[in-house]
Image 1 (tube, helix red, strand yellow):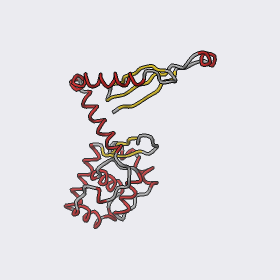
Image 2 (cartoon, helix red, strand yellow):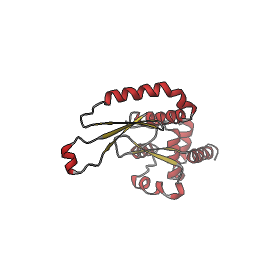
Image 3 (cartoon, rainbow, N blue to C red):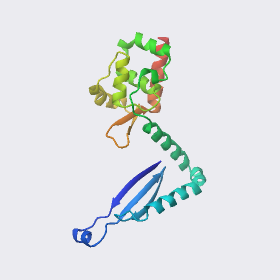
Image 4 (cartoon, rainbow, N blue to C red):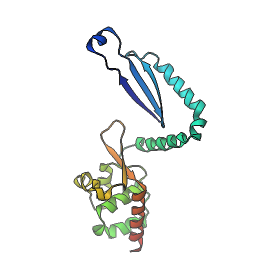
Length: 195
């Protein structure tokens, strides 16, 4: 995974008139940031990127030994999940069995919104946006409103159940389960099946 960042040097107005601003470009690969300097014309960017690729290829094994490789793999998987098609998702896309769906629909009036949201996240093939959650909950016949998601869902009593990630190039966020959220979803699932 590569992240780009640009750092324009602070220049006074007179300096800016007399010289080209220096630009620092960084390429993040896992926990490592490779940076180099260029100018407004982008002098040397192609060669710098080539060198970064060579370094990553050459020292990949060393990065794995230090544990950075594991982080790279985790981040790459996360980006892949976020980069997946953001088209609408339906109940058919969830890995929820027909039996679980039927049990959920029978007891839907007594299901708290938080447990419904956690269950949807548990069975989702990717992280879900508010729009995804609202659409899926509507399909189950218990619509979760934007207002609930934007307020109650973020209350401290639910803290740590889900993690939120920005969608690259968007203000939208997607949500997936943290370990406590997964445990709560599985406990609710057991209750749903046996109770």
